[in-house]
Each structure stands twice: as C-alpha cells, then as structure tokens.
Length: 399
Image (cartoon, rainbow, N blue to C red; front, side):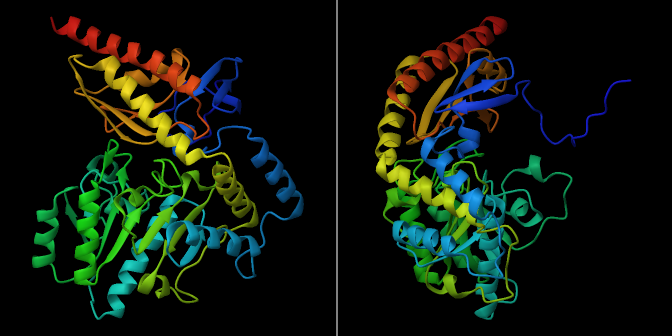
C-alpha cells in the first residue's frame, strides 16, 4: 500500500529537493548543482552558508532563541535602531512574516482612522497587488484567482490602477473615508511592476494634503534588493508605514513594520502583539545581514549586477517575436513575454537554474545579493537561449 502524503496540497512543487547550498549555489538530493536566481523568493540575501551568518546564528542558538515579548529583548532595540537609521523613520514593530507585517499596517491605518472620527475607514489598494494570504491581506491583494473561494472578503478597500495619478485624485474627491494608501514600491507577484518615481512623489503629496498615511509594502523589494535600502528611496520620499520581511534576516523568519509620525503612535499595549516576533535569533540574523551588506558593499553590487543582467537580456532577446520587455531595479528583475511561460521553470531547473514565473508571463529573477559577475554571465548565458527556444517552438507550432 502506497504511503499517504502527509502534507496538505497547497503547493504545485517542482520535483527537486535541495539538501544544502553554498554562496549562490544549491545542491539537490542527487548532488546536482543549480545557480540560485530566486533566493527563496527574495529571502536569502547573503546566499547560502554565509560564514558570518552561520557563525552568528550558532552563537545565538547557544545563548537564547526565544524569551517572548513579555520581557525586554535587547537585540530588538538594536535592530530597530538600525532600521530607523536606514529609513529615516522613528519606530519599529517586529513580527515573523511579511503577511503579519502587512496585517499590522492595515490595523494601524484602521485605528488611525477611528482616532480621527472615521467610523468606516477605507484604504486605497492596487490592481495586481499582493500583500499576503490572511483574509485581510488577501482582500487588499489585487488578484481574483487567489481570492476565489475565500469570500466574503474584508470590506474597506478602494482599488485603483498603479501609476495613475488621476485615478487616485478621483478617489480623494469622492471617498471621504479614505485614511491611507497602501502600495508596493515594486509589485513582485504582480509581474515586477515598479511604481514610477513621479507616482510615488504624487502619492506622498496627496497623503500630506489629505492627512492620509502613505504605506509602502517593501516586503519583497526592500532590504537592499534594488540597490537602495528600500525601493521607495529611489523616488526621494519617506512613507509613514513600511512593512518589511523576506530578505531582512537572510532566511530566518522575520517581519517588521517601520513607522513615523502619528502612525508610529497608534499602537498601545494591548492593541497588537506576537508570540514569535522579535525573537533573539531573528534579531541577530537581521543585524548580521545588515552589517554584512554594509561591509561588503552589497547595495552597489545589486545595482551594478542588475544593470548588467538586464542589459544583457535585452540585447539577447531584442527583436525576438514574443519578447515584451525586461524591467526592474537592481536584483529584482522581470522578463515579460507575450504569452504564458510557466514551462520555463522546469526547463530552467533542467538547465541548472532556479527561477520562477509570476503573473503567468513574467520570468522573475531574485538572486542573492552576493551574486558575482560570473554568476550573472552564467544566468544570462543559460536563460536567454531557453527563452529564445521556447518562443521559437511556439512560433513553429503556430505556423
């Protein structure tokens, strides 16, 4: 009798199991090596088996892993101070995931509205956005496919298209209960769709005029991935609320909400909490991640290699029927085709590349920030022929 699969059927997994990694490389159960161009979906900032991270975590595990937020956690204060310094904001709440960070941001916005006498506060959210899979963050997400079957969704969200200032201004004129705008600086699951700098600047101005909170979800695009500590910094703005997670601790589960001004004062004891959030192990991982990024110049590395990769892909696919564009910032890159291309995930694995496809038609590249020129060249040298062959096969079938 066949063994029963004990796991819930929540993932369409690829038929590969990784046993260990080293730097930008992953190794499977058969000993085969793969170039990691996904970094655990923007999580493994320092790649795999980084000596500074490994040493720090070993030491921390031998000291204390968890004590709970009923007591002082000095490493929280230390990492919080670092995030305040890097962001230009003032206060931090730590949790364990991006979903939790976004959920906390939504609670801040609602309580902020109630404190201003708005009984039914509304939050502006975006088409193609992704903020998580809890009922509230799922409701804020702009993807009917992942929402289907979980209705009724949470009310209180007003949806607009990204980079459309006029649409946001119409909301301002017509919806007096709006209290916040909630957007990703670069939509990740939505297909690597950047919010333009001038749009982020317009959002900041409108929020200032209306007394709204500007809440920028940096869960995937933050922590140096784009070549700045936070992607919104390319636009020269400072949000009121900024959720973080993924790459902040290089693989140890972590989430954070950084805030300033009135938003930083909304939560009081009893309003919000977490069991695992801010535990000493995660805090130590966050501190080592940031310190290593600074010591090794990984922000500049992300900018430089991202431009190299995007330019090389553009040259390799220019004029190819079916290629739409390559876009992104730093080491957050999307290659859009004009047709669904999910088959490329398995083909890339067979060729020794780990990547994924998002929004059906966008090959998503999120390499660890320790990527080198040799890794970038191997990525492009493998991926471009794979995409060209895929498009040529489709054209031959249609002929």
